[in-house]
Image (cartoon, rainbow, N blue to C red; front, top):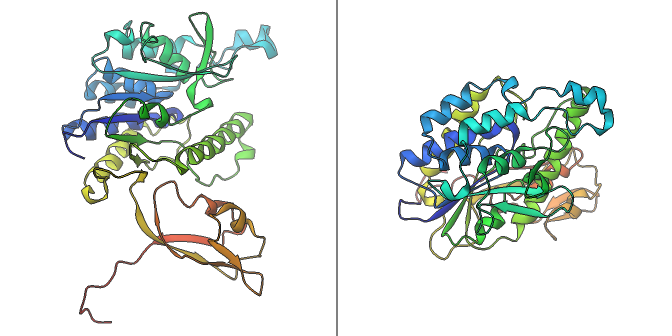
Length: 360
């Protein structure tokens, strides 16, 4: 990608891991790469809104790394005491309202310095609504951003035009489909969700942790389904390594911002892996070798169900055998690996071919 490439930047949700997007924007703008527009979900919408409203990277970093839990999450004790099960949410709306006001102010979408699309869902109809598109751009940005951050049960829905909206991640945490209609050459999608990271003892951490983990699994599965048959415009997918950090962790915000910067800068330096004119699908694509550890395989057949047809067969001993070990994968390939109950399947970067004439 170069400064002439017209691209849409899609910033996904992931709780406080979303502050990684500040580092993403820093890496891009340092190289003179300015998105034609930003599409955001949840904290991705908040970061994108701040940048689109004219906040500098330095200002966004300062806000991000100095956030405290009380700036976002303050328990709604009064609602829970008096309304009990009818309480709209676990946390009060006022702290997040104040943070969004600080980042965005009172601007409407029409007032922004750069185009912004915010992903929300109507909690009553299930309709996905993207504020900032034509006809949906005269509302205050702060209302749309609050709605996009309103994880159901945690923060109350936001009323806009007489309807009530919640976190767009309910349907689509990384809304690349909306970017498709905006007419750019490339979609740069930044995913800060948990991916398929293993969690230990979630069941011991309370109902909020169990709900959050279940939501992560659903988000990842929906994303894989959406991207599996993707064609154009090409997507370049960046996944900062923040999956080990909780969505509600305020103790590692500086680390998260820096990882967003590191991951983006590293991908921008791999110029050979970026799609060119006429390319389609999800990038980067890298050679991997898939293996099965026979001593672990129990012959359950899960790989035959989850993997692409014909990739695995069971041999005479009932053990799984990979028929096409050498693969070229995008970041969304290989999801079948985590469905093996004995962790018998692995994928590793393929060995680089030896140079001609090199010693064996």
